[in-house]
Image (cartoon, rainbow, N blue to C red):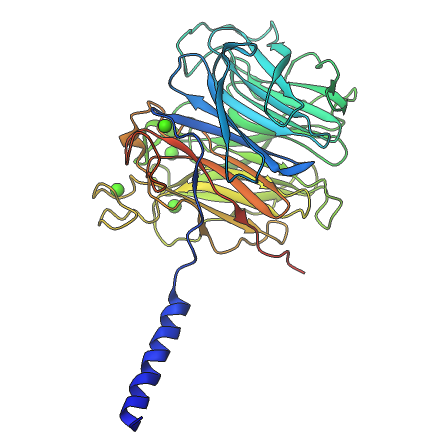
Length: 467
Ligand SMILES: [Ca+2]
Ligand SMILES: [Ca+2]
Ligand SMILES: [Ca+2]
Ligand SMILES: [Ca+2]
């Protein structure tokens, strides 16, 4: 070759190497789990620790009027068998708000709301989610007020947004009991062996506190978190309260502990969630691994930097003293925009102690077209993103775009946009998020692109644990 050709070839090779290095991370394979016409949203997902290829998702549906979408995978989330449950079957007439939790025995617990009523059902599956049976129907304490409201998805029903968590030989349910958060627990001793639930008890300092979470610590202690107040667009304050001995004789604390002011009210409207609004959606994960951060409890929440700026960000704090004191907040999303990140979920991998956080994210919607903008208006469209921490919540990885596509909740005409929460399970080094998506990036949403929502998932591998 002539010298000039050699130079050109060398340049070509260099350009090729440079463009390889600059190539964005591979888009994760997305799976459309629901593939149903009309809207599915508000997803819960759980992984069976006895068979991590067994993953279960339950979500809201719009049609039928009674029921929830349920899907089971036995191949790590690649393929799913789905059905409608709670459509006046043995689970009754289900409205919505499902929450799932697998325990160390392989029991799968499910709680949700009935269409009508004053009670919170608990269902159990001992076959990996293929079938459920009702094991309890928890009545809220007579002392708490009884509002009436029979509308499906009513904002203020007499019981609201239950959450269930199990492990360490316990199962706990918390819900808004028409005022205070109400908590109840039961002992679990084996497959299908669930004791009677304790008398449902209002948690002190939680009146009108809602949209929270519950977690079980390494000594069986239980923490609930919630946000005051449940209305408006400002002034959201996160409180925790701990029952130091779980199912033992001690109860939750006489006072709730203030953690942080989020500027996110119970119904804080943002352009990407214009019909339903968002709350701070605090979530908990407690390390029971026996590893270096055993006993550390993590709190994820949404912070609006300046009230009503719509610049929501995702933060994590942790406590090593059962919630008495908390670390400074670490911002998880690493974008340089002032757009909204919202509806976060946190999960801890019981095999490593690593944590994963996922959320809806409008960072790529600058209103200038391109892949992150469907409508030419900034901050209206969302993708689904996530990050990991392998050092006990002190730092988070470079953020990962999980959704292959970009969704627009307004186009879904769901009434509640993406809903009030997203889903995440994390086991064996793989995070399994579940989110509402109308990008049709997989090409098999029966409603097409930018119409009604389907439920999507992906397998997101965690990075190696820090030394
Ligand atoms: Ca606000
Ligand atoms: Ca932001
Ligand atoms: Ca847009
Ligand atoms: Ca759908």
